[in-house]
Amino acid sequence: MSIDESSTGGPGSVLLPAVAPEVLAEAVESLSGRLRKKLDAAIEGCAAGAVRAADGSIGVRFGEDAVVTLRPGPSGVVTEADQAVCGCLLAPRCLHRAAVLGASPIADPQEPAPPAPGPDPVPGPAAAAGPGAAVREAGGAEGAAEGGGLTAAQVRAAAGLWGAAAEALAAGVTAGGAVVQAELLRAAHTARIAGLPRAEAAALRVVRGLRAARDRSAAQRLAELTGAFRELLYTAGLLASGAAGAGLTGAVRRSYEAGGSLRVYGLCREPVLSATGYGGVATHLLGVDGAHYSVSDVRPGGLARARGAGAASVALGGAVLDHAGLARGGLLVVGATVSPEGRLGAGRGVRATAVGGVAWGEGPTAALFSRPAAEAVAAMPAEGAEPGLLGCDVRVVGASGDHVLVRELTPGAPLLRLAPAHPHPELPHAANLRRIAGHPGLVLRVLGRPDLDRAATLRPLAVGPVPGAEHSLRLPPDWLGRADLGYDRLQGAHFPGDAEGLVPQESAPAAGADPLADSPLWRVRRLLEAGVAGGRRAVAEAARGAEPAALAAALRRAGFGSAAELAAELTAEADRRPRDAFGRLADASAERYAWAWLAAAAHLAAAERSLVAASWA
Image (cartoon, rainbow, N blue to C red; front, side):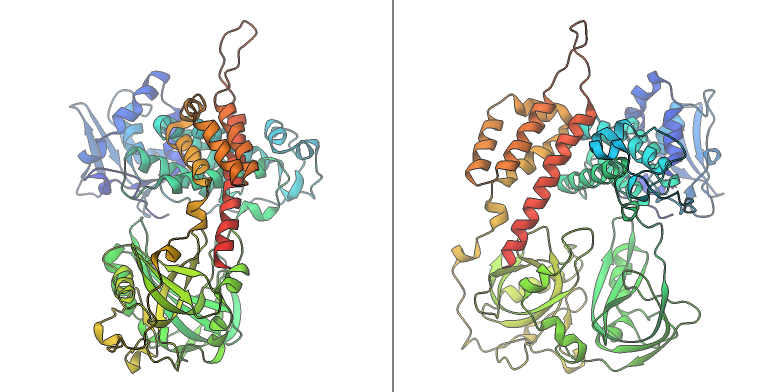
């Protein structure tokens, strides 16, 4: 288990150990209805009073008569209920214990044993009737497997997670306190036991996002929480339908397989820095057959670890070189082990020998720069996988905020935006891009990862001179024609000193076109994010004003008729107020509202992906 400290607030919160999701869920579930109403208030500020004892336990005092003591296991995580005790008379079903557990970070789950495979699936009527019907009927027969190769237990677990996610969405950040989060964690735990790691991971991201938003954490972005809700509802809803393929369940762990003998060449280094306190480096490699590989070294340590790991030794088969040397050199690996994502493992039988590297554009690296960027982006998966690296030769146009506007050296190519691969000010990505932006007309070779959520945006990891170009970068010979933007710092001597012959900067109007930002889809995005922030009530209030009419009109004028219809259905469902047989107002279905929200969110994501893809052409 790893510890996620980003979801807690207060100066003392880092003292609290991570807690397994099921331990927290059980503690909240054991509370009476009266105590549950007090839980959110009890959580606030209690972590600031945490004190570490000499024996390693952590105590939090509540007044004079109650002390909650946490004794995490060898992994540093509270994984059992008896590792969290309180000295009050109501323990263990007390508010104090639940509050401390609720203030603690949520641990990543332990890896369960895979569930036994079920019999061959036979599509049932619920699958044929659509996802909503399948969710309602998911408590069916025990022994039969559902469509798509899922077992009945998996379908039931997904249906339970869908229901909890729908309630959390209807509550929003405003009402998504500890009780709502605990229901999600309980459903996520059930999904883990059933062998649905992807759905569980999505639920944990939502819970962490809700916590960060309620704590007003600077690291939280409403757009990220909206995306997390979309992923959770999509995954749980499709699994609950019984019609999903087994691939949607996700993988419990990354399994390494034998890769034989490999010869790989370094491309660049990339700093790795996570919100959970981990830091390190990933060095990207390319095989002689064009396959992409990487060697990573990520451990606890945060920013300091990320900055120092770039020059750390490579822990792979006894190879005597560091990551800086590997990024510009190569390896001959015997007995290689490779993960599905291309990570090279460091098993006992792996032997590695350092070999010379190749300059960009030579050997197998030539293919990275041989086709237009638009062509390379079009060949990448639309979603579900991290985009791969692409290379291109560009000419600098100028700066636009923290972006660098460039144009590919291909006739008729569109403007591209170079954005920092990591925005942390202590990493040199942004500073290097500012230096590059100060040299309009400069031509350079860029290797980076396209940002498929933004129009024509490339996040460069490394840059180098364009072969044969007069006004290009002038890097030291030992850099082998490339500068890692996350580690190397570009200086004045690395740029041409004579400005004569540089192509003039293009006009600002041409640089400002952004089909994604200029489309009225932002109105749909704002509506969806309002639902995440304020819950169903916020969307219902928006439905009673003039906003729905303006939204629909703007969307239809731009040709987004389906988006207009889905947004109208969402606002109508949010404002629906059913009555019972006696005419009294009844609670509206959170399930129907969640389906309406998910339909609008899924359509928005697809429309934005289409606009992003078009921006590269």
